[in-house]
Image (cartoon, rainbow, N blue to C red; front, side, top):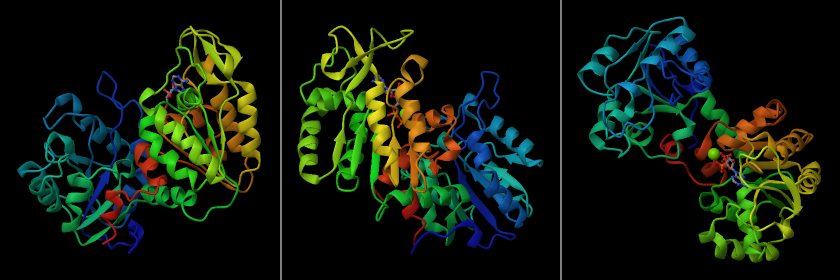
Length: 394
Ligand code: ADP
Ligand code: MG
């Protein structure tokens, strides 16, 4: 059975445990420096409050490795949230135990508690049974509003869920599932995928599964470097994943038989290092030995743009170059703009750096869905069953 959503659950007077992702960057002074993740969960939290729930929020923050750490307390997050909600947020001094129990028991209908950083307990990441049971004692209803962690089988995302009979997705998580689902299964064609970035090893399985699904696969960024190298192109000092060369070769020959068109860069922007003020455009085949490729060139961007102009479904992950630097952002911005121009189809962007690039290009609102789900979204669009979502389906 498909997961329910919070709108379908009875919340009045019940302890509604909402697993959120409030893993936000903090300022040195102990404030929240980017509250986007907190703000994204507000509709779900407000809905629960309005329905008279006793709201129990739980999140991780940073990597405290199972120990209590003052610099990774959720205190600044609770303070920000209290301000945003215009009401008290009662922070427990621990993720589970007598202190947490007291804070939860003292809740009234429509009030909000927050457990301390889940990762202060080692049992969160090991999905320890005792910790999962302890968390479940705070929940009459379980809501997952942390799509970003749905690919991890932790106590708060999987372990505790079987002990709670009423469960479902928060609004934001529901939107991720619905929108990312649009590039799975039957899609409108042509389906054009654009893949870049650096994490070639991690993304290889996405690439492989796109072979059977996409009509055109365009490669850029360090991902393309590895494929050019696999084809025998000398890549100088460019970032290449040598361990993936055999797989890249196998992929290219499989692609020839699959009918999918693979678009590799024809020209590249090269420089001595990524901090250079500007690069030089060279044909991909004539990259000088002592330089590295940091972006795709204008001809390559135009070829990808032409493929995108005909697309009805687009999946983009991974920048076309070192887009954090204005000198090497051209290819990435061009791809972002071409995707925003796709008319009437479905365009989906996944990956943290790609989502940030779409924002920087000022086109995020012209894209069907810019996912905030990071690696969880990557696994989802590969067609993998995410444990945090599977746990909600029984
Ligand atoms: P996402 O977060 O969207 O999944 P990745 O994390 O895989 O994307 O890749 C983003 C990173 O890839 C950026 O930091 C960017 O600087 C880097 N990158 C892209 N192309 C190159 C390149 N040619 N050489 C070095 N780094 C690159
Ligand atoms: Mg990234």
